[in-house]
Amino acid sequence: MAQDDSFTLDQSIAAQKALRSALNLPEEVFPVEAFVGMVSDERAIREIG
Image 1 (cartoon, rainbow, N blue to C red):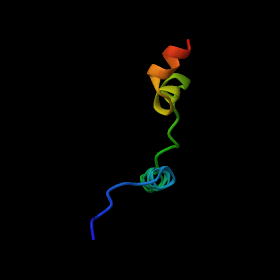
Image 2 (image 1 turned 60 degrees about the vertical axis):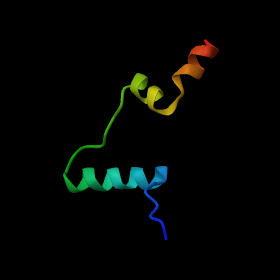
Image 3 (image 1 turned 90 degrees about the vertical axis):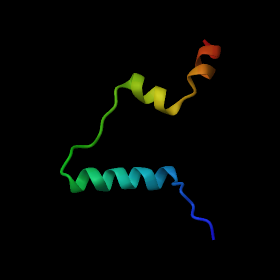
């Protein structure tokens, strides 16, 4: 059987939270511009205006 090297968004977030918690790091916070860039397709936004 082939190995699946992919993770769902929920799994990725849970892993990040667990690692930050284990290292006693604060919750990660992103500026609005950075967040929008992560969750959107910049080209599509530019086409919309």
